Image 1 (cartoon, helix red, strand yellow):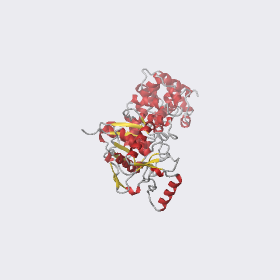
Image 2: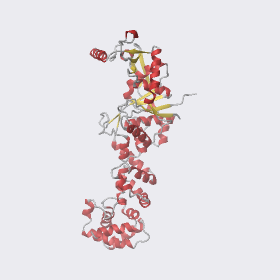
Image 3: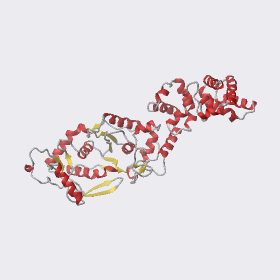
Image 4: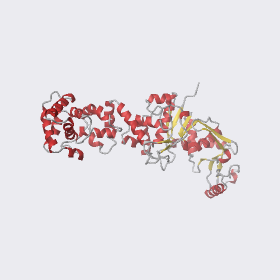
Length: 474
């Protein structure tokens, strides 16, 4: 019987769920789902000064918004400190670790000497083989791993390939600090073992950690999980991703009007490919995803590509689903509460009817909101400068005449209003554009909008006539 695949996403709650963390979580989630396994969530909150409850909430909220569900309860690393200490003591008793009483001054001198000699092993093993009876009085020791002094530590990485470290260059790392608190290196190994994690998928900034953690696994006689260290995300200019490139929290992308499924699709293609395919359903991602297909070079974040992909998702989304997404995003955007207050059965129905025309132009939900502004506008309608300039005296006269013509239209629809407007233009010797543009400006306050006859249909007879008469008499 094969061992079930178990992955884990293990963020440190020192800030929001950044975009790189979102991609790491996605890769773990996809791999677990592909092989019918589980993805676990562990909050690595051992840094008590920097770990915060708001950050934990932001991480959990970000994962839920992305649609990345985890299996079982959230594990909090700090709550397992007693177990980590227990393992360190076991290693000490088995001769796999030792007490180190080196002072801060001694350690600083060792580091300085090692660097001066060009060595990467900064700790010289001062207490590695000394008798504990030589310990200075009143000094609380750390517990260090008794790492191998020669040979190699090898990680057969699913992304990076075979990675080899010479043991002579690796320190006897600290497992337990002098205050009894476990180090990150020990805690990660113990937690991954106890949670039965089979695959560790994380950023390649952890690659050196993989060597140190492998030594801990080997000292304990535990199986080392399969490792996959994925390249980091860079900006379009090839530099390390920064806030100006898009190194924002996942919640920022929600506030910018991206759909979670579009962001998921974009993230999966950052460093992973499946032929030339760009657009994936969730099931297609799950079916195709595998670790060796991840590239070794850093992926480049490109807002234009994300925006275009989001536009594809918006155009292909069900209109009713988009209405719900439209309403949801109002909780996160500036002045969204003003629009939310105007949401009722009538405005929802109007938005649903207008959605086919609005979504064709929109690449984000914010653009969708902007395109639907005419539905929620208050009377008298505020006019954009271009619309104001278009509504000359002659144009306002046409608008007043149109109001009289349209009042007689029955039933009211895009087709019947279009027929009436075209007839009016022909009878009065106007080109259709000379009639439609003032009509658009008077009804929407803008010079661009969805099809003008769709606008008439969406707003309905009473609202249209009221807006037209407002402008005719202005």
